[in-house]
Amino acid sequence: MSSKVTEGVNVTVETFYQPDYSNPVSSEFMFAYRITIQNDNSFPVKLLRRHWYIFDSNGTHREVEGEGVVGVQPQINPGEQYQYVSGCNLRTEMGKMYGTYSMENISGNKQFEVKIPIFEMIVPFKMN
Image (tube, rainbow, N blue to C red; front, side, top):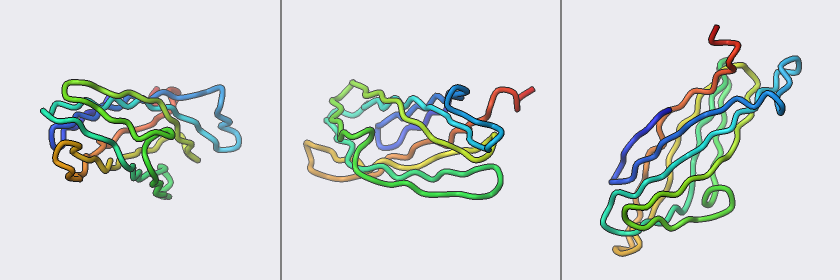
């Protein structure tokens, strides 16, 4: 599990290998990740955009960006958290991701960036 606090917002990531959706013979490895976003500020925040950097262990990388997460732009009130699950496919048995969320302080109408910590995705048989 990886965690990082930026501007009073704590982002925690857990990863899970998805063997039923993977095909190692074809170099297709599917991972799910659960993200928990905790707002430790005294004001509500809204998640506007996401920007991901995704790296396979063979040196290839890609970027993904867009509005919100899993089709929504959640508002997170002070002391509350928002959790979602998404996925990532890799062409290798190991990889990593990190990124940023563009957030808005709803009370102050001010935008800021929250860092998503680096997290690794490793198939379980690779760790033996």
